[in-house]
Image 1 (cartoon, rainbow, N blue to C red):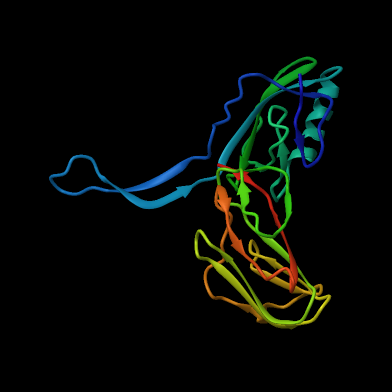
Image 2: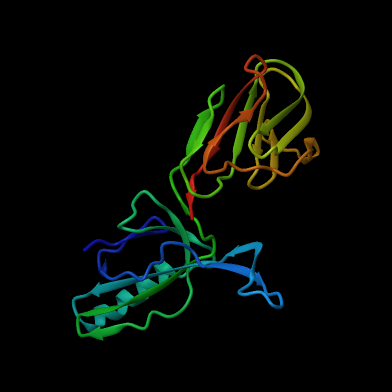
Length: 242
């Protein structure tokens, strides 16, 4: 039986058991408003996606009971962290979750082996695909995920410019950077962290908040970018799924 990768590692003594209790999506919490003399309730506009439980039932194999106790020590050292680490399941090798252990293992021991469920939880409820890098032109961007994806733009200037604006046509969201750029300058705009880097230095004073930062919606996205004669614009993003 196969294991899984957590924090870039797997363990030869651990196998994943069949019968995973994994849910197809993270818990969704909605609001409702009841009104007198009306059946049911009105659905509120607010929707809250909660952390995703990710329990994995496992089997631990050892040489003897003493070896089993050492394996449990190694298991704890491998799995217990303060921050989420990448988790790649054996049955979803093209998806990455970010998980922490939250709860106890409660193993069932029998001489040379043990079995139990690792109580992983994903504070970030989405699962991620591999990173994408696209040099932008007239082509639209297809986000194959089922959730919005965050954007990082790298703009390399070919000629002088006093500002640039990148606009997401579908949402109307845009970002405007005001700076005296010259040929050879490199600008990085990280809309995830709302960070602007010019020639390797963070420079938030150049960021003009015209509209809320945008994301790539599932499906096709159209972007207006600086003309190709002024700069080359590269987009990096990671598709993610609900």
